[in-house]
Amino acid sequence: MPRNKEFDYTEKLEAARNLFWEKGYYATSMHDIVDAMKLNRSSIYDTYGNKHDLFLKCLKDYTAFKENQYLRASIVQNKAIKALEFIIHEVVEQTLTDNKACLAVKTIFEVVPTDPEAKQLILKSGASLQAILEKTILQAQADGDIKNKTSSTIIARYILSSFSSFWSHYNLTQNKKEVMEMVDFLIEQIRK
Image (cartoon, rainbow, N blue to C red; front, side, top):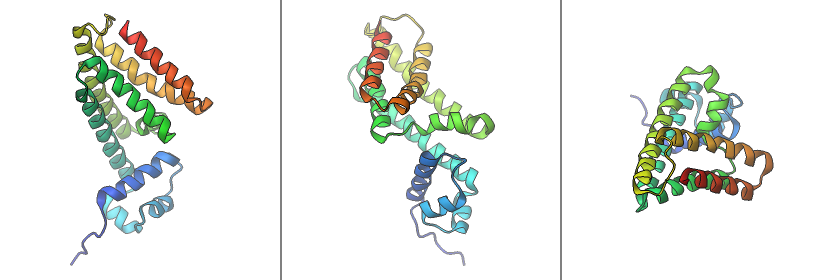
């Protein structure tokens, strides 16, 4: 008779996700994973699959979390422009507070060039995040809070691509003030 699993699936997945986030996919060994998850190899393989399967599960869990974060942020404010500003500030402040780039951004640079499955996951998540931003931007334009007539699609893509630039700048300078000035400039450009 098989043994019941005596661990919290989500908690262990989070431990693996944090490890991949910290070390990167390629620098993480199975030994590191065993240590971080505090499970033996057979439990990991039986429950999560191999290292790549585990990474994809971590990435899928993370991207679902980010999509929910954007969605929640887009509806908690009473005005679309405030929701948009809230999303931008929340994403950037979390990155600066945690002192690490978005796992999706790190994956884009490290894994996506050689991994079609990770690429598809990131593209799907990016499309969801973009759709949330587009809807919010369209409403802010309709409200007259965004004067910019540029399409909501282009503005949403610009916002999403700016996040990796903010992290890159912070990673080089460790200057939060400069990053927040760049965030304010981004918002100012969107509002024009």
